[in-house]
Amino acid sequence: MAQGISKAFIKSSFIYSFIGALPLASSVLLLPFYGNSNLLSTDDFGLLAIYIALSELVRILFIYSADNYLGINFIHNSGSPEQQRKFIGTSALFLLIFGAGMTLLFSLAGDFLFTFIFPGKDVSFYPYGLLSILTGLFTGIFRAYASLMIYRQKPNPYFWSNSIHFLLVVVFSVGGLYMFPMTLDGPIWGRFISAASTFIWAFVYFRRESQFQFSKSILKDLLNYCTPLYIFYILTWVIANIDRYFILGILDQKDVAVFDFAVKITLVVELLQAGLSAAINPKVFQIWKRNGDMPQGSVEINRYFNGFTLINQISMPLLYVAVLFFVPIIVSNKDLYQSFDLLPVLMAGMVSKVWLLYLLTPVYYFKKTRALPVIYAFVALFQVATTLLLIKLMNIEGAAWASFLCKVVQVVLVFLFVRKFYTFSVNPQKFIVYPAIYIVMLLATDLFFMDVNHYLMAAIHLVILAATGIAMFRKEIIPFVRSFLTKTTPVS
Image 1 (cartoon, helix red, strand yellow):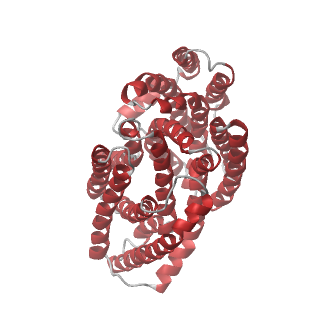
Image 2 (image 1 turned 180 degrees about the horizontal axis):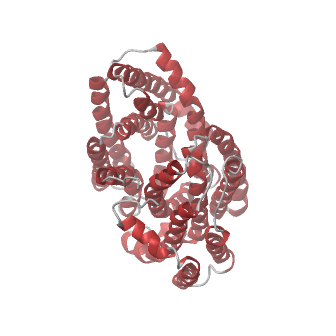
Image 3 (image 1 turned 90 degrees about the vertical axis):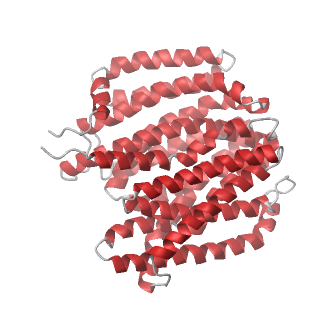
């Protein structure tokens, strides 16, 4: 009998998965304040979404995926402390110099780019665009530090540094909103101050634990390793964020606000999916390792993902009801209630993400990531073309449909790649038909039943999903729950 998962491993895994979700959690937590009509206008809410997306793009562009390099190579150099100091120093210097150079370039060209991309729109580069760029740079360097803490198995500094960052974002953003209502000063400066504070934390660590000097061989290895990932993460940003920019360019900032609010509501589902995925993946990896790293599915693996599917399906209509009930209570900006009409289509896309997370698990474990940039390039091109076309045809609802279609295409392309090296062994009824039933119900709601009471439709969805789920999963519900209540994973 193999040794079970240690208590320390469970504790550290919980810290990494829970704390790693704090950026998403802060976006959800701040919604009642951003949606307060006495603190922020609908137009400013839309512009804030644009600036936040800019910060995320900068974070990706300016750190060149060196955060991934730091973590992986710490493991490779674990036997040589001196070599660790060299590669950490080279990586940190690269982050600082490349980031500073890109910041200078964007600072000089930013005003021209904003005017060129958004002609006639009330969106300016100074000061909020520049502050967003600095926020993205500082956040990127801090994320590199946080990634290194994971691979160094240092859950305590990871916990405290990320918790402090989260608290600073919330405190300064909310405080700023009340000090400077009806402006973007609070949210933008709040994010900047928190990012600058944790950047200092990361810089002090890098300075103390490394040699700040370049190694040509390490730098060359960094560039070779990071370039494919760099392209991949840029494409990921395009898929996730480009729709807001098209909405602003074709429609206006109020439409950006409505769409972004709807997307942020679905982040609650993403938090659930990320948490379940973080809990399941180590168990699935153990199964593959125990079975000789054979790239194939099994009944044991299916139990985890079938349970994932069931929890996801039942949770989403409950979330839908909760949103309809609580948002009018905690969000006073009635313009944002228009986002309710977008939720069925956006949630249909989130249902399909169960399939994507399943498909990506063997990609990461069996190190088949080189094809991802090519796949995501096709997805990004599809996203750009579809979003532009459907926004012009259907206004803001077109962006929601483009998002859904993009997620479906993403699943199909990843599936076509994964089947080349991985042998599937899934129960089609449980893992394909069951989610597809909910997708069809959500799309039918959007197309034919939007005039029907939203509570009634969500209740109908829940009843159908619960009844179907019990019928399909009755043999797996109890074992799945027990597997997460036990302290060790039994091995046959």
